[in-house]
Length: 384
Ligand SMILES: [Mg+2]
Image (cartoon, rainbow, N blue to C red; front, top):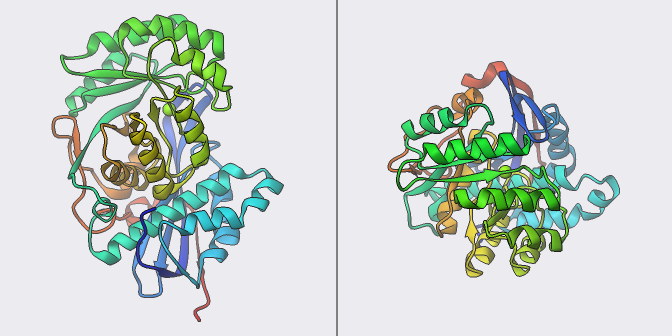
């Protein structure tokens, strides 16, 4: 495990942001009617600080609950005593394991700890005066990216818009019925230019029989991967049956714990490991999965479909991980993400240049997002 110097956290701030959407986004599990983001900021007793993002996409009112978990449950365990980025998250997981069992809140607690791990790493890189990916051992300045979240309505148009932005890989959402899914996959495949590729994501929408049938129908179109054709808790036998059809299987945004990834890699059905740092593991867990996946000859593509701080973390994580993975970038309009850190640099030949400043290289612009701040709270630790 990569570690940094110990730090003593003096303040923890959470900020819930929520922006209603004019055009709600369809997904296989319901309509997303708002963009919600939960940020966590940690400041050490020397005034150095870092930012993380805690997943809270669904339900869109769930940010406040996770913010309270951060302030009232996780934060007090963190503040006031020296902690080591890269080790603190595992310690918090252990200390909160019984509470997670008692409450059944495995997900929300893991999400909060993931965001805190990110913030600790950003803080550590800021203290060291280097970009986060450099602190984590990266030797690159950019990462390949793909346009994600391509919706079932006129997907070819979305691909063409993404092509104009410099993307060379595109991921289509499936799970809207066999005929529509296959027609959309054909439309996307037909829109590709030479050298471009596409992927498909069923968002856990199928069971074994349908997943195998759809994989067989999609195979001739040559997608790079088929993502979450089954529920994340499907049996090893079901996953292996779908993987045997021949399209590489991607999953991980709904897997929690290094052991879950190790099982899937050992069983050989998982070709593309996609942990979401804001749902489980933060940067530290993501790097552990990346090392395990790459050493097994599989791919590592961090999942992210939320706000700007999480996107920056995913980019630094991917750069540090190495391999031939791609950065997931939401193709849907997200004015909240843009307001938070401003416009991100344009893609160059399908690759996204990492910010060059210390830490994440960008900070949230509080003034720009003030209209959408739904809740903001700070707690302070007592100093020894
Ligand atoms: Mg997905």
